[in-house]
Image (cartoon, rainbow, N blue to C red; front, side, top):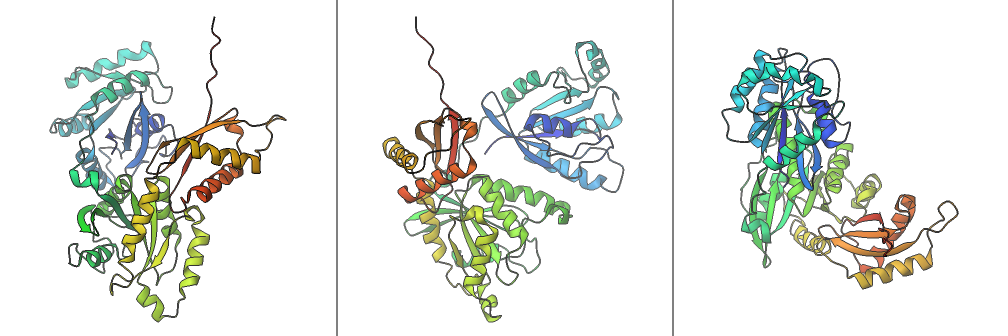
Length: 441
């Protein structure tokens, strides 16, 4: 898993702007009014070949009704993070809240970097003098808005990140399965049924599982690592501080898994949030099995299996490759079939295609349907190679990669699936321009 960097600081020091700068997105709300960021926000970043996760937090020291909640969120971010990035406001100067947060940070043994924001150039670095009163040896003058000092900050940041820990032996060899879904769809009940014991607490009250819980299961000659997760809700409906934290844990568990078993509630039908949860798994490149739970109740109400599966296929077209089954965690109906589906998905998920066979598939596909012209000239595919598995990731070298239309990408993907039998796994296609050879002599 990628190391986590938590951005901390009092309100309106520019944390969200820095978050957007580091992740190269506009995901975090940015406003001149203090306290815009109420919840922690996660994003991916990379520097000098080092990948890490950035956490944006609410402003420490808010005095409104959110103060206690935001303080809890900050403490959770500190507990979870591998490195803290403490942001100070160069224009506003030192604040008592800065000292309070510094006292909290000094109580932990994790690395901390200190950045003084809103320093737009060398001539403004005189503003750092006030902050040296905190007794800090190294301050990074930056402007998150204008990118001043960001490269130097990132150099020190990636150098301070701890090395990735070695995975436990069980996690190295087992098929890792994340059980995800909306609250109260029966995730814990399903694992209890599989294990044949009440290993996880089950309650009709939504949100019982507050943290990701790993359970190793030996069956059918191999190991499975089940990751039970808290239910994922719509962001606007997440109000309790514990639930806010548990949503992040659920999303984090998807980064660890090979196959995500997405649980839906047959009695409630396919909801938009079910599709959103499935989308989280798809975006993270997980293999997927779609399990429609509580089928015993749905069947009693006259619901037909074909109808709900068709509805799911229409709403989750991006998971057309994922197998679907109806189950009942309460009665055990069809639960054992999940293992067969997970095994089949994982085999394809870890599959590698030889370069020779792959290029024969590519040549045949191009002969059958050539790519459209680009500015009156043909798009040339030089060759392709699989560069990774879990999921299968294929790199194509093309003269104009930006001109390959999404419909032709879909055509190539379908040809690969048809010729290789990889019809139950996500496949990633990357298109890159071939480097031109330098003239010799």
